[in-house]
Image 1 (cartoon, rainbow, N blue to C red):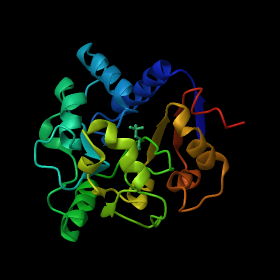
Image 2: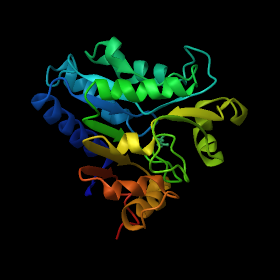
Image 3: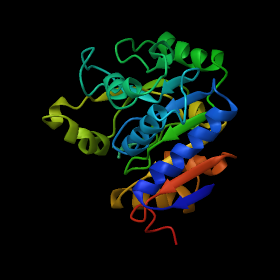
Image 4: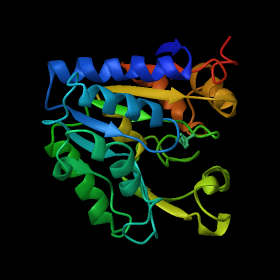
Length: 240
Ligand code: PGA
């Protein structure tokens, strides 16, 4: 794993440069995208570069990691709305080529169809990840089998607690989600994981220096040949 430690601001720029390089060489790249607070600065930088004509998503395709189950269509905290608001409405990617799992159709066939669509698009060139305080990636919580593909899952209590800041109460935070599986993520040709802030320090330590275990989903990344981890100084505090 390549580990880059910098300020949050510089991380956004450095990670954006990785997208520029990818899309310059492969304009029709397939991007795996993430939600949460972590990618916001990167998305703002990608939007700035796009508007300055320094990157184009016009031929790109995207697949998001996950979506809540149970929110009404158009709910502002749904990950579809998050992506439209924070990235897609600011860049030139055709909306028809942006994919977010359906939180309404929780059938196994819908999960299989999401996997099939990723395959049909040629597979993920670059998957973006945040990391949960508990080491989750996507909504693959501790204990998720490494062999998992897209599936429905229950959110860990700590994940619901962490995400309640976006809702008016804990009761409103969905209890379940659809998420790409660990195998789906590991099939990406390259992976970027961004970790920001002191709450991520222990999870990042376990990911990078701990054993590879399903109890720390992100630790599986030790087995991937092309992972870049960007951590700010607070998230990286336990790495040496
Ligand atoms: P955050 O979430 O970016 O809001 O901290 C990351 C995650 O849970 O994967």
